[in-house]
Image 1 (tube, rainbow, N blue to C red):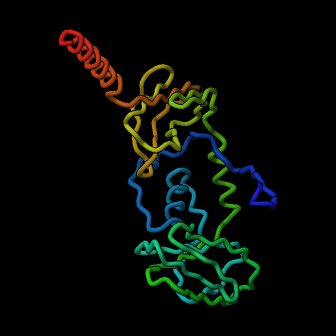
Image 2: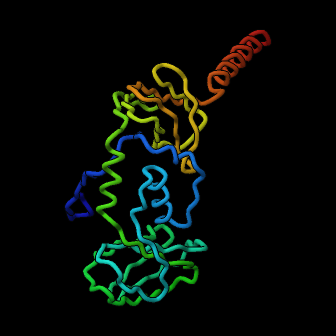
Image 3: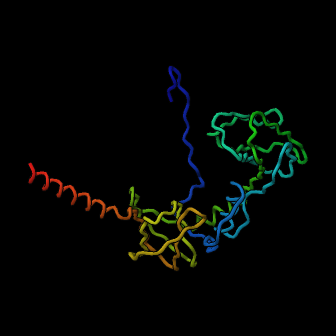
Length: 247
């Protein structure tokens, strides 16, 4: 990548844990979804999708961290007000991190500390920081969750801007989770038949599938678009006719 007269190296990383656009999950995905913070939300998603416990052990901290696990961990900063002008720093012992309103408010910490070791937290410059959450990440449990979800994914065969095709083999009557923001302009066909879908995890799409192999089509059509185009064309034609008669 070129910056002025200097070149810097660029890297492209492949995510080995990326899932398909859709995959089968437990029917608990239909339950109401509540969570308190980003880590808690991810834990609740895991529980509803797989019935496994979450992948984070969460605790709230203030000015000190006492190491209670050998797992790597994250810190999440929760602000109760967005200040678009103020920058601030958070320091863990002598390691400092800078933030502003555009920054991701999480810090990944490689756990090279001893059990029981204490880390001092110092914050400079932000009076709007509401909470700090520490979350130990259980990679082994994450791997189990990933393997379960990856075992039954939607195989995408055609992907266009507003039309997606795929197929999936369902061994248990579960819900198909689609990582597409919910919108009632979608039309979803299962084996050629239009199928009802519903909102899950507050903002995504879920639908019921029976055992067996299924062809899935996801079509996005803005409701009223064709009617709107027809009205516009009709109005244009009438305008042209009117204009010619009165010239």
